[in-house]
Image 1: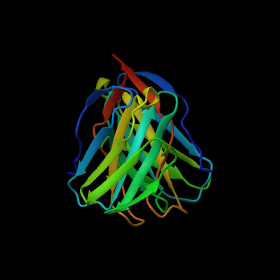
Image 2: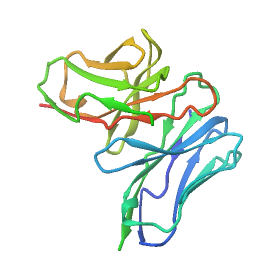
Image 3: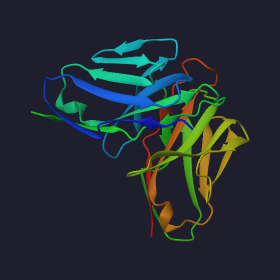
Image 4: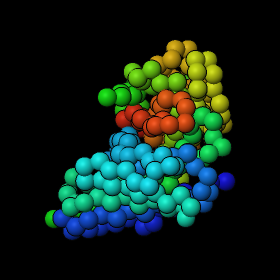
Length: 114
Length: 114
């Protein structure tokens, strides 16, 4: 069974520093990996989706890499801002899944200090 | 922009009541999902639907049922609410197929069962 792990569970960085968030998964047979942001008490916002054939995906200050063979993805957020305060979750879709179901990590809670 | 809406942000019900949670999406997505999110347990899939009137059990379907009579609407039903169903409930939708099937989430419903 696919297991998705995000370490650390919480991260605090000074404003302006780059954020590095890690996601690992046990089964490398995946269709895609998706990164989400969840503001406190709110729903999830999709940030990036990386197909299994891709190595990275970029959107503004966000860059996500995927190393399928080693079961890892990293989300980089450049020049962190106080508004980046949120929990960041990664989720994978397994290659044997016909319906688009996702397996989620527990998330990394980010705090940006002034 | 994809929009997924949920009928209530906050709901308080009594033990034994029948509870309906409604989710509507406006992007003609085939797939719709219901999750619950609890501290320490992350997101867990309750049910999903891949077409009108079609449904599949997720990881934790016990105590829940669902209904999908129209493509844009997916309802989660708690037949007899219990205190252990106090949770944050999140609805999501996505296209079918293998490529670019991002899941888009609603704002969530925080349900308290007294």
